[in-house]
Length: 395
Image (cartoon, rainbow, N blue to C red; front, side, top):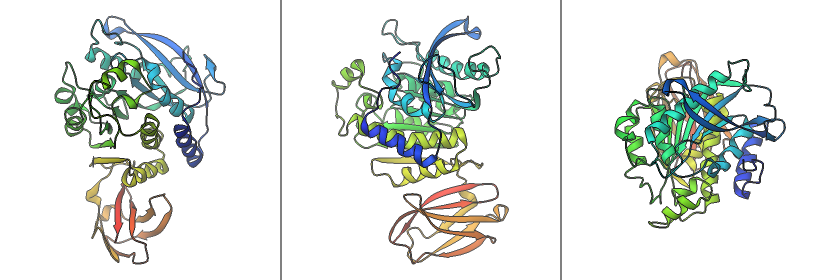
């Protein structure tokens, strides 16, 4: 394997350690194992996997750390090796996650089977969860109940296939998803994805054009909570480490990226890390951080649609909480569903610093905010059954 303890670029290190300090989470060393599993449901198909896990000592087959850790399965791009995604396991695993990289369907000839690869990703999640319950497994009693499927390019398409009709996972995230070749992931599989989803896109992606790939994917997803994030100046290949095959393809098209690979990684990880902590570890503070960065960031634009109620900040039920006007000059009129009372309203600035908080006992309230400086804020509603965070603009 490649040395999983090599230094990340300076920018990525800064993002990682700043977030580690903010969340006060333990930082683990990275252990590694290469295991080939077989899927009895598909004629004992072999699925070799590169697995990175939290350990107290970095290295090959070092003991896994104490605790239970969420599973993240990651799908590689077309003719790209798993090692093109080292920045992801170097950033995510130390925060307490097991990352699994199935290495199937990586050749040019025969042409990779996208459906088969998607099934490999789904199988890897189920297999790792079963390993957590198997007393002879290296991962016995080390696997948490939450999981995610991530993927880049072809792997992004595989993640959509793997997440369709799959309630065994918690969320799915794609990076520069390419819908080339059959099957049609957008028409046939995206509507069957119901778990929360993020679609990352590079605004300057000339390999898998956003208008033909990631935007239609976002629109077609059946997820009741989904987010589309476009990275200004970002490209297709810069979601990964420098890779000859991907880089060569990107040199044949335009526009070229207007940001560096390091800058694109910083932007992705600054959003991905708190999102995963929120979704897979139920870390509410991380959810607030994700929303702060999503709504106030200048390096991205986004679309977001969330209509499911629940206990997670990622499930935003707008019908339970309404306010106007927005933008506001001096006072905000709040309307709450009576079933959500008592509730609490909190206003924070874009850094997450709490500016104002008030307990609400009636379904209609007026908040005076004339003392706030002009700018963007987040207004959060914490009710009896739902949590909602929205952007508030003070004139």
